[in-house]
Length: 179
Image (cartoon, rainbow, N blue to C red; front, side, top):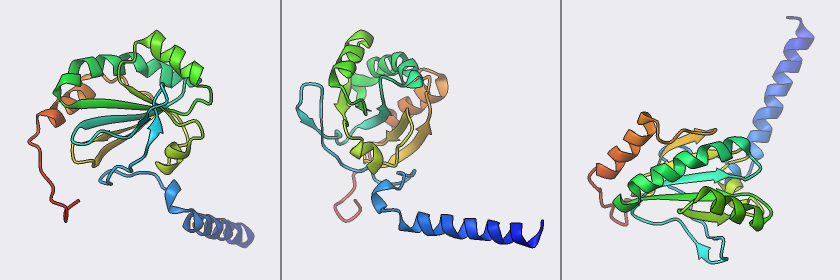
């Protein structure tokens, strides 16, 4: 490698580091071990909703125009049906602009879990989500345990068993000073 190429690479690295350090905190991705970020969004009837507390949550960011998102929904419905009475919730945050597109798809797919509308993508961006689908598995204490990019077949044994194990784990009560 010649000297010019080496200097150009160093400059590019320096610019990348500078840009990364200037990014606001709000667009840093949520990482495993982080506390889930609270938010309030409207459901499909316009009622303000937030994340449920004290439950194992699958938080899914998606859109109706996203083919992989559409593909994973049937397995999410099955997973929810299997575990909904055991302390499990799915919160699907759609970034569609048009609420009618979401409502039509939700009805068509029998999505009987919480679907929220993030019309301007503010919450998605708060979580560092810019591609879809993206999912977080959150324990009953609000701690992110998994961060998954791309569509998932939720009824595959690895995910199904993982959710079941989380639901059967002893609940650890956190005191105010720990949370």
